[in-house]
Amino acid sequence: MAKLIQVNGDLEVKKADVVVKARYKLNPLSLKFITTLITGLKRSDDINEEYVFRVKDFQELTKLKRKDLYWAIKETLKELLEKPLYIPNDDGFIMCNWISGGHYVESRGEVRFMIYPKLRPFLLEAQKKFLKYKLENILPLKSSYSIRIYEILKDWYEMNNRYGNKAEKIIKVDELREMLEIPKSYRFNDVKRFVLNKSKIELEKHTDIIFDFEEIKTGRKITHIKFIIQGNFEKIIPKNSQN
Image 1 (cartoon, rainbow, N blue to C red):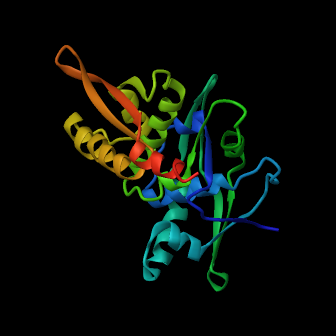
Image 2 (image 1 turned 45 degrees about the horizontal axis):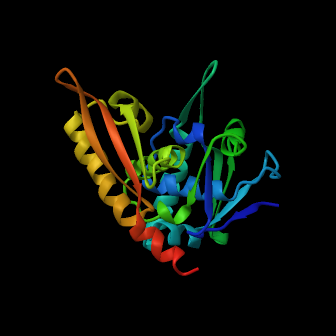
């Protein structure tokens, strides 16, 4: 029997650290689709488990108009089959697709699909390092870079938040480019404008963290970025105060 994946912003997402830091690039619809799927995975699931996503839930997830749904589902499944993720490991790397196939059943208003078997252990590897957050944090984000940056910074914030409400992390510009698969044609000013500044605005408006960043030069070239990450109390306090 196929397993139904339900859409609920209050669901908790758990992503293994290696998946958060893997190299891949998906559009926002595909990222929200696969992240919502991850909330429904269980260790008890059969390795050949088929998962079901209701089209009406997909519409609620994406806020798309009904006339655009067929195109969106087709493009999402196509992306998840054609754009693999790259996961470095101790003896090399693993490259695989997110799903092994998809089936749109128009008469039932469903999308059915299976997880690529070699990816399942990474998606379920919660006994090691993993990131945890509420799904509602990424659903309003419009940029795929914003979603990836949220997950990366949230991961760093949870691991390094030892001094009150702030965490700092320095990363090489080239390493960030690789993780996010930013086009080589982007100069640093483009990265700053379309990736960093845009993500900064979206995260402050919609998520439970905010960030600032500083450029670090080696000689005349900007080689590193220092991220300063804090909790977004505009988003956190109102929810906690209701308890």
